[in-house]
Amino acid sequence: MSAEPMSAGRVSADAVQDTDAERVTLVTADDVRAAGARIAPYVRRTPLVRLPGERLWVKPENRQPTRSFKVRGAVHAVGRLAGRGVRHVIAQSSGNHAQAIAYAAAELGLRATVVLPDTAPELKVRAARRLGAEVVIVPPALREEACLALADRFGATVVGSDAFDVIAGHGSAGSEICLDLPDAGAVLVPVCNGGLLAGIAVAVKAADPAIRVIGVEPELAADGAASFRSGTRTAWPVWLTYRTRADGLRAPVLGALAWEHIHRYVDDMLTVTEEAIGAAAGLLGRELGERAEPSGAVATAAYLTHRAELPPGPVVAIISGGNVATGTQTREELVRST
Image (cartoon, rainbow, N blue to C red; front, top):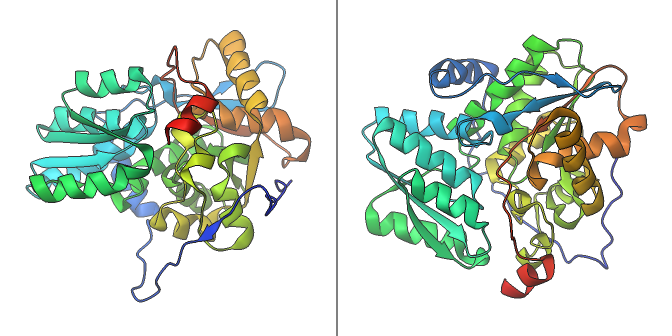
């Protein structure tokens, strides 16, 4: 069932040196349960929907207030910061985390600034502004650097997309899956920086260690799969990860905290082609009426591609987002702009 390892000739991967100088505190099932209770007033409890004729159930996180799962972690993290007296939050994002931070800040009365790449779909840029955030646009490779510089200038608190409270909030989706389908054989989760996969893995493994938790990436942005195979957090160059149409999954490396959870709790990582992503998005629309952006369709694509290899029993795929942009740049244009 394992994805094919990436050829060294296709990608020059750099190992990211993680320090063991300090013991890493991991999110627990208790943290996830507490987060679920805190965010309940602000998020939707999405159902499981079965794909006709298949053993696949999808969890449509595209139905959340900002049309992606990101609202779970953002509301939890921003809410916790607000309780500590923080008044200004900042985040860098490909788009969906930015919208979620803007939404959470607006709901909780905080100021929000978000840093987006100049390749972000205009749909996501407009949405973040509409939700009240100040939006700063930079080249993709400068997102993190610009975010930290602005945080220092404004005295704002950075909300990373794999921060502890973000991972705990995302884990609530996993808790819901286990309550709704306790006999699931596997859960397929899209992977960008790994925060969603980390949170779901914590929740699912606490409920039933026998359920397989599997991350899914595009073949063209498979730094997480490379990390999983090697056992070392591995970065890909931005110009490589930006080849995929799945704009929400272009992060060049797993978050350090997310990686600690993935390394301990995740069972496997799979990759899918661009063609499979497009086919899955089309199928979700035709059969279920679910509008999935390419990033949101990768888990379904993994089921369609690898179903014969998956464990027996029901399979759950996360539709992580439905912010479908029109008139987006071609992959070639994206590569040239990085």
